[in-house]
Image 1 (tube, rainbow, N blue to C red):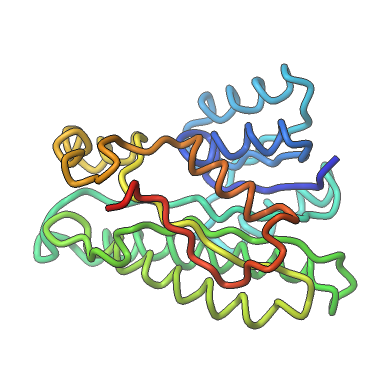
Image 2 (cartoon, helix red, strand yellow):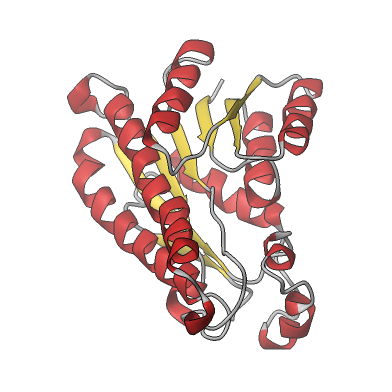
Length: 248
């Protein structure tokens, strides 16, 4: 057994691919979802069918009480957490900045930034050797949008992922001596449902010419990078933001 991994927003996309790969690598996995129970339950069922251990927990990671409940379920049903993947995120609908209302902007920031910080806080309290923990790894899922800016599509999302990059660097320095490694991945154009949900269903195919490698990335490729950052093979990676962009 490699340990216990909590992957937020793991009912689909990069999160689901990460949960499945973590289980294959020997982790007991908590699959977290917000709304689509059926999709998340399918991930758990696949893990269990392959001989892995997994639980399913609904929680809005932007809500502190629900985050506390989520981690308590992991404590009770799987044991001490050794890896957290902060994957839960939303883009919000696509558009220019002047078309968004305040509530839409707040929700993007709450899910992508506040949620990741709240989850990391609970993980640190459990993992930190200063608190009697055994150490562990936190991997945040950022986005290339943080450096490209998201103009004309999703500036609030890009700003949120820029915050995640800063948070990754700061937390990594704060807890490195406590046995916790904090890093992030920064995916570029990845074939997931997030684009269609934002109203940009054709966006990915149209943007392939901008990618030097000439294709989209996959959720499974992101999962491989996340699992590597979680592993001992990345023991000297502290505060790194690993780009997966096909050269874009």
